[in-house]
Image (cartoon, rainbow, N blue to C red):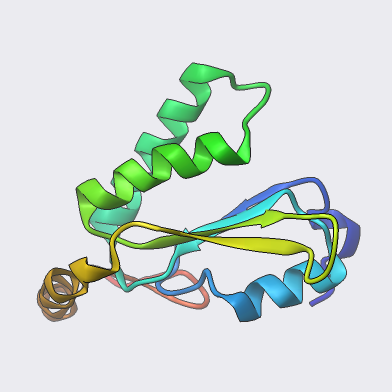
Length: 137
């Protein structure tokens, strides 16, 4: 990955299915030092991704748009993940190797419900697919 300084001191928010994983975090934090990387750890319906991100942005910008903190992101996203039965990961920057800490958000036991919804979505073509975040319509 050739991001370097471009991603340093930024928050990276990803929408593609299962994209927020340790391999990606190791790659990004190996060349850059973003404040955080956040994204789904499950196959996610396009409709769920859209409502989770729109809700998160709305909540964050209402509180303090000039100073978005990792803890605030995690708190809001945890509630949204539970509401929409999705799982996300938030990787926050720390001062020593591996340079990040992983936070799991949502309830993994919702996987059974999620699998059924994803199966239905595959039939209708409404999944956000990774890793390129291509939208299947």
